[in-house]
Image 1 (cartoon, rainbow, N blue to C red):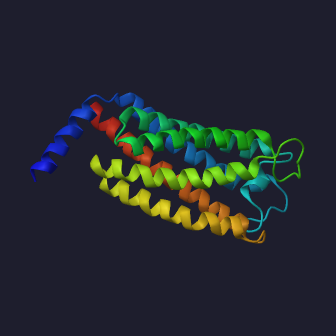
Image 2: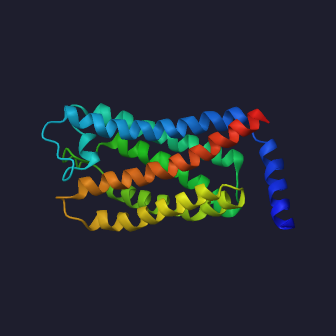
Image 3: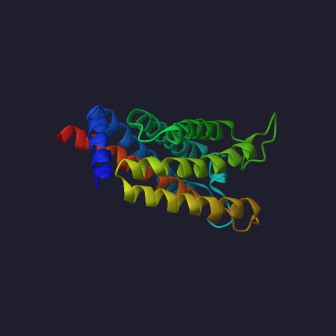
Length: 220
């Protein structure tokens, strides 16, 4: 019990030093980025003829005449990832592992921007150096990594429920990622959408934690 009391006291002292509006804005940005990705994934197929939700990937939506719709969704998601990274760096709820998670979020934001900008998918564009597949591998590793290294910080700072959620979502991501990479093209669109939900879920969990901490600081 004393150890728990000391931990709670340390958490209150650390939270008192946090800037509430920075956490609130970054938390909202993280949630908005996930909303942008989901809305873009739902809206873009309306304008892409003969798009198959099961067989055709999200990447197919980001090429061709209406690519701007999915590109904006990807850029919005990248902004959400960067918001989560900034909030995580400011609040810093863990030790070295948490720092690795902060960097993972920043790298993921950069990767999503590159994916949206290079247009190496869906339109058979293979000019120059094709790096899309390597970026996909990097995303697979980084989302699994941030779940593994940030859950301890969430738990130690009193966000046990968030810790369990991010573990569960990370496990789901780690299982589905190799399945997606090894799947046939007849179902990879569906699997990619499931992975997208796992990714958004992790960012939503983190964003809600930062938003709650910001609101608590403001009220205190």
